[in-house]
Image 1 (tube, rainbow, N blue to C red):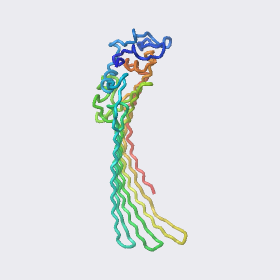
Image 2 (image 1 turned 90 degrees about the horizontal axis):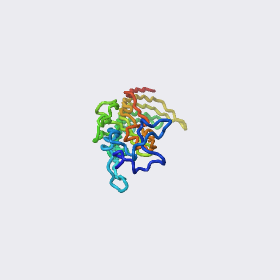
Image 3 (image 1 turned 30 degrees about the vertical axis):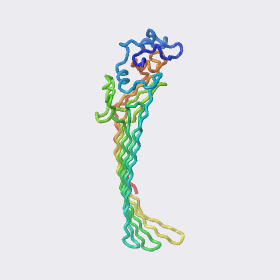
Image 4 (image 1 turned 135 degrees about the horizontal axis):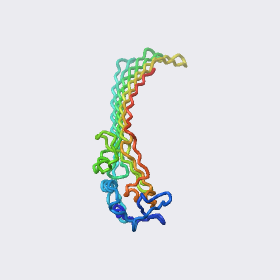
Length: 285
């Protein structure tokens, strides 16, 4: 709890290390000029880091500043299959089958208030027609329509909508407001949260398989065609939120949390406003 206020006087820093102002840490003086008693002055504390802490870091509920919680990670998979067979005659049979699958999972992303979703929905319709002209000649026609919808991405966080809402003036949000943020923060030997980027995919496939089989003694001859049209429409918002990495070296303390509360990351990464929006049509014989 004390570290949230910038008080590292009781923290177990590496031997011979102390928390210093990042601007005093240089190659010639890698430990910089330490703050008195390893306490970061209030004016030095980073407002964004403090707001992130208030929004997503729960207070300890166990001795020695530990926090424990049981988090439900639900997984649901609903499936339904229907099939209708019809015998037009002894030598002519048809069938229709419909299959539905809705798979949903809600993973947790290390922090209790940051979660994501995976949703894969499948519709499959298959028509089959089989005619037996003779014991050695059989004709089979199968037509299939398949539709898949896949959604993967973060869920909207209640405590803060994005980095901009936490006061980060240099954290432009590169997605529509309807797309939740993909939070990414890495504190070496501390904690890390990495949320998947938002991805939406829609696939629509059509296929016709037409075969004529002729049996002659020990030989089987099959002639026919397989025609398919595959269409995919996908959109992904690549890393719309910045990624912050802290390793403790900016404050000279080799203690990662000190850098975090000083707002001194080792690196900051963010993509440009890129989107993937592929279309794919694949006819083949």
